[in-house]
Image (tube, rainbow, N blue to C red):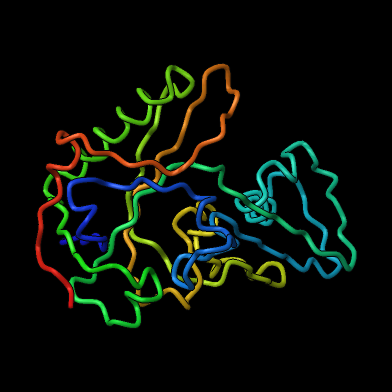
Length: 232
């Protein structure tokens, strides 16, 4: 697997670490960056006059998407009339580093992300874990003790609708990625072929702090990227 980072040649010796919320609708973002629902998903289940009994297979199906909604001891059952069960997930703000599987993207794709992009760096994927761990160290150090851990989670972005509606019990075809929406984006971004590293944060005394994108210039981190080509 090869991964690529689109950037500006002027930033070749540095790495920008973004945040999940920094890609929400804000003035100045390009179409390929602007995503007001980053890290969010919604599941709607139409119950249509169903009775669900604790400990049953049906209860397990519901609880897999809406944890602890139906307790096992509810053996007498719960009757749902003509109602909808709605589960909304919102991944907490975290640091993210976005790459792509695409070595030679179209000009349209590049411009949608940032029209000033003129460089492509190849990720030394043979040690993606080493890179992620170095970034984690920087995140914790620059927080001055307020972030105890920045646990990296890596993977490809999945392109699905963020809202899915089903009639119970037809839940088996729901995309599992809805449970982890930090790796979920709408199909309109499919051309980006994104691979993402998300840094899940553990805060001192469980008190979240405001986080903003920042630049890393430490060679111990930037050495994991190598210059591949300059885009025309």
